[in-house]
Amino acid sequence: MLPEGGVKMEFPNTHSCEARLFEVRWPDVVRCLSCGGSDIGSVEKRFLYQCRTCRRQFSLTTETVVHRSRLDLRMWFIAAEEIISAYAESREEIRLIGHSMAKRYGISYPALHRLKKILIEDLSQQPGGGLIGACVCVRPTPLLRDPKASEEDWRDQLRSAMQ
Ligand SMILES: [Zn+2]
Image 1 (cartoon, protein in one colour):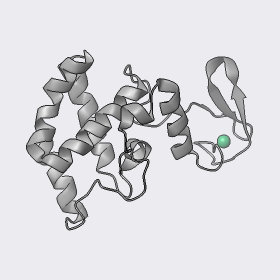
Image 2 (tube, protein in one colour):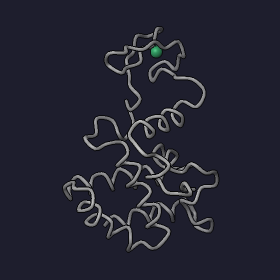
Image 3 (cartoon, helix red, strand yellow):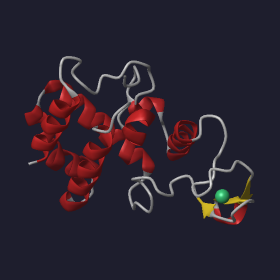
Image 4 (cartoon, helix red, strand yellow):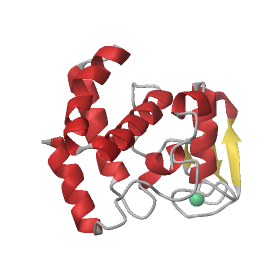
């Protein structure tokens, strides 16, 4: 479930969002994206991790939906919360989100549309709603899906909300 006081309060800045992403992505130990090894060093100047076994370099966001995004990670979290909340209201609400968010956050509509599309794809992943879904839902018990709806129904509903 979403944080009690909302995502903006729970994650007041980019750093807190990064810390949350780290905690969700690597709950016990940082693992290499290539070989799964846990003997990881860091390349501090470039904010990278490097696997001591296979030499692979990666960052907190490598191979995630937010990798190389021009948008701040916090924006992703906030948008995810809006989509989840809108979904709880109605499908129509999700449809309307794009324009109002683009205006409120001062980003272009195409950028917002892309963000929304990626997020809906992420949030419809099971179990737990993908990486960003898991990041913003800080309280246990997923609310992403109507408990009566099957997984297929839920995906269909999200997809049709995109049209
Ligand atoms: Zn490795």
